[in-house]
Picture (cartoon, rainbow, N blue to C red):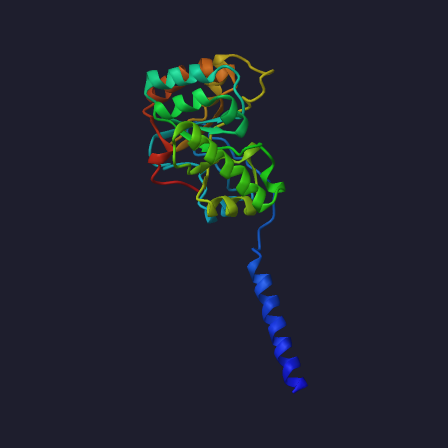
Length: 261
């Protein structure tokens, strides 16, 4: 009888051990700092050599839209307000261009009227986390808290019920952040056009911003701009005009039917 009990206990422990191990996701290495090979002369950008392309494919993240179509997606990161978002919204309204604004908790609590205006004028609001942490260094529960609080508070301020898109702070991520956020219903949005525009002490004028953005235009581009940049604000209308002159159409992320990688 003792031998039977011992055998049953051994099998039970083995099954528990096997279940515990399998219940823990086997995540890939990280963290990763998002980067890409920029577009030159209309050629497509690339993340083939960055080491994380397969992860973005696995979790259906956005790098670009349909690269066979001359479509552009305009995205802004709004960590804090620097006095330019109203002017940006004025330009978007004048030019009839949709955009998405990725906001932090600080922005939600300090700029409710701008949030309302974004929604009223047909733009999307995306999640940029509540405290702007390195999400690869925090727990799954903390990731959920960071994202859920932004969504809840944006809904309370604007009435926007749905929040589908996430841009991870500073572009730092690992497989766990992709997995947890996808479980919450988010699509991770990276970018295929960007330049160093976030340093408010290193603004170089509208022409600099115009040249940096228009030189990278390519089909299916996701354009990352920071709303704290005076250069971006001053150049935005000209960037839109030049893109349209080249035959590009600006679309909302909600209209993206094909995404890569």
